[in-house]
Image (cartoon, rainbow, N blue to C red; front, top):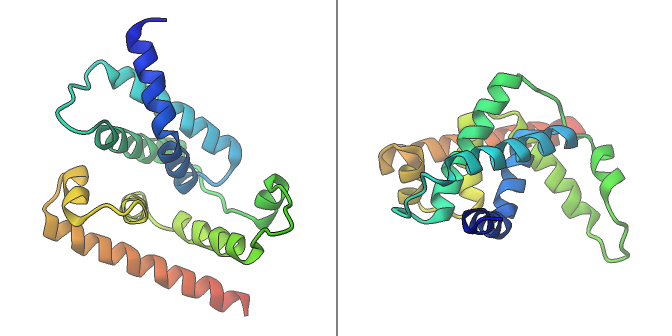
Length: 169
């Protein structure tokens, strides 16, 4: 294994949580999430030799991962919905497990899946606690525009969550 391969594997291992989150935000089915994770990793590897270190590795990774997710979603035109059963089949039962928290998380992902690709990216950055300036840099837009688009995406997400709760009652 070359030193470049070792470095790449190390960096991916450090940041794989980000890749899992992006995959989960854009794909509902486990097989699709796995495919997207693999595609993101592949695209990162293809571009790794061009990483010059002008920015943080995580910044570079976010940009490639989100762009890959958006392209993957559009090219595959995969749309499906999360079901509680998907999560129940994968959960390890623990006595102190907070099922209400899991239900809220399922609802949130259902709502996120109803957003368009760009709004999903804004919500991802919001959940990752990016500043308006960082989001603007990642998206290639002005900071003011990033804040406006972020607020719109959050409002859409809140509206969808409200509708989900309303439909449950």
